[in-house]
Image (cartoon, rainbow, N blue to C red; front, side, top):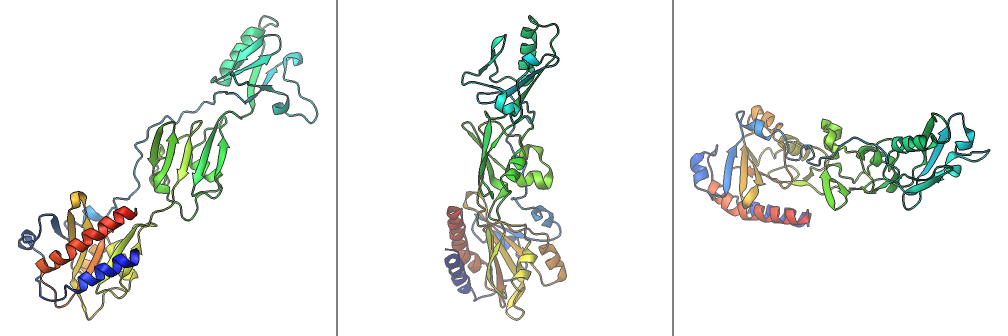
Length: 353
């Protein structure tokens, strides 16, 4: 599909080789083309608007508290210590751990403790459970000093799936588990992972979080603390390309999914302009915008200043870069012939992604 798109656009652009147009493009030229086309001549006064990609890390709109307090649930094993009273303490012997001999929280959320009977533990922090046990033991011993801890965390977990090296289920414990920590515990990201579109499913709500925004910009909300039942999925990186056509040494596509790439970088990586055939004044970037409209950027690189401006113009996925030949075709003919094809390419790319 990618090769077909490139061949199609090359064919149409190659048909636009006759005629002549005068540079730079002016307001009169813009008025003469279709209303859905906006022409922007890149210069020092406006280049600052295009130095940041629309795909730059974004702060997540997902809001959740990062406070964490583990609450006991069915399946957890509790260890109880009453200082100075071994008869009231969880028994443990040689070869037996606290999780082996502790008190298991039953399906109804309670556990049985000697002398005081059933204790409800479900959805309670250990501090509350400790307080209740100490209060009820006060009927048998004076001022009991009680310690309660979770010997085995079995009731709460999160699932990590997708493009990680070892997808798994991870138990939650007294230490808060963040999204980045969970992904690292799953072996980290694969080479094909897209950290900008990590999904977090919590109940019936799904949020898409740019984890890269936390790593590169420190957006704390982009690294939320996970809750019981959360499902984290790391998607595969999408193909994000720009198309380089016309009088370029090696017309081709260029991958934008790994890092931001500027117009000058893209041209340079493909061998630069063809010295004899290319017109350095006629470098155009066709970019689809909202409502099926098109913005056409013109860059004049006939002087070093133009190439410097190109180092600040960041490409977006779906951009079509076209370098005209000399003599140049008439501007109106170029737009009229190229525009429908570029719009078709943008539509196909939108469907692919």
